[in-house]
Image 1: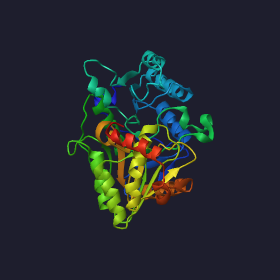
Image 2: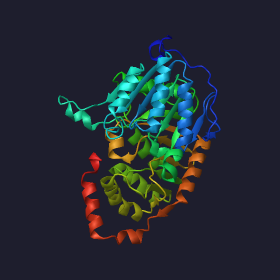
Image 3: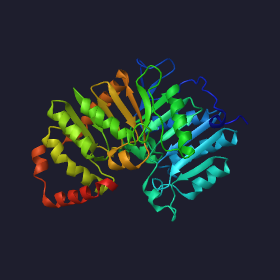
Length: 386
């Protein structure tokens, strides 16, 4: 069996792209061999991920916050198991809280029996109870160090139109190749070894990098990047987030941007899945609206995408929500890029989503009743733990 690349340090080799329904962004600012593939449909993403896993020759690295033992999850499990039996080094790490009500121990037993190195992240330990609050919220797949996928999609049937129908969740993922995929492999390996901070850098001549929320430069790097970018915005900020519970600096940056004439638009869920989080989010609406921020609620289905585009140039896709838990507690990873084609593709998707969203009208919002205001106050009091 070949030595796993996380032990040998073997470099990448060429891999043929897999056809699919992804939006392929022209790599105008990327070195040769780099590419972005934007996925907004679970079926297209899962097809591409499964094809990549099945073609793996040396290694598969997978992290997921949720890995359900449903028909989608078992399809992934079988693909991972088949590669492990074929001698490919396969490592899987699943968050023990994220998958608590989604995954059964049968998944762990099956993967281990197939030869997969499997870990639950931060299972409950009486001797270290405080670490239980810190979760691995990353969704990351890296194959052979050459192809990577990251974003908001977990592994469960609710993302699949084939299986769940028209009410499938709305999410966004990005596929990566080249040195960005190598970065993803390095992030996975460091995390697997127990390292929780990384040195981040732009790749080649391109302003593109994978950024964790903990780095040597800044303990909460993603929070720093979001806030600094909002503070520097000059034309527009388009932000999609399923959980909008902003910290003081982020909220003030959005309000200040709107006050100086920046077109600030936020897309948030109209259908909620975690009630108290949305109570806290609603408590932030009034000051944002008063500052001129425009807020839209996405109506057709559950919104789970986490993206932002600033001034049509800077963009990010990843696992981080606009909330305290993502910025200050959980482990996250985002692609951050200054690439016009990727930003344009995300802006087109944002405008398409707005066509299916309802604006929050300031006058109507201020007229909401006291029962709603009381629930919002309750959520806001505990916002740092949500």
